[in-house]
View 1 (spheres, rainbow, N blue to C red):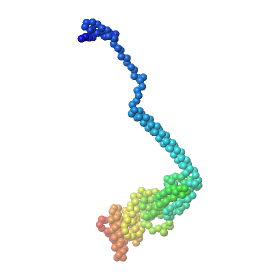
View 2: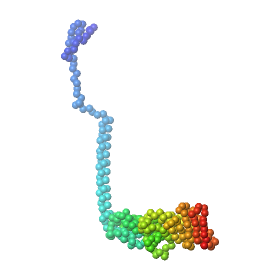
View 3: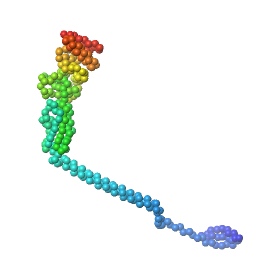
View 4: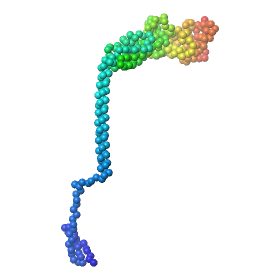
Length: 298
């Protein structure tokens, strides 16, 4: 049996002793192989995944290009169609249909509309046209529609008087929105209550009045209109100059309070019905006290 003992290492050589004798053994130097220049063949799964990614990338690029082409084409066609609509004589206005007129004349509306014919139907600014028509103090609302290729429809809502106002030796109508406006029909043809005691400084024709007194008188009339019966037709005047005084067509003076109009007017209606059945007339009726009506007979 031979025993080897390592004694030293020197210059890549190993000194061994065998039973006291030295032997030189050269070490084999392992070369280090550089792997950076080596080509590693990918596995089949990795290659398949890589091809799929490339294929999806081409698909997405193609889709994007297709969408861009479609959008560009639509934009071009849209611009061409827009220009065609706004320049073609096939869409020139030939008919203006004005509907729901009551007292106003068509010529008044057309003058306010001020169309410069021939005019393309898509050139008309509906908002500005509506605003021009609504400057008329008797018009509450105007609605305008296009009906291509050549027709425009205008729907008019005129103001309806629920009372008259006496201002500077003339009479104005006033609607439920507290807007005064000039009358068209002859005064003798109008059978409406008259509101008196309103300062002329509180009245602007065609604009909603801020007069508290006028609004209070209109509130009374609205309650009367909501009641069953003919109380509205029996009221000839409401004076709001100093308190609230109502006059009937039979010249009965009715003093009212500033609250609970409905209860007061229900009491008044009951008293007038009772007097009518008894064929009697009242000179004065006071409604200002709660649960109490004072009547002075003629």
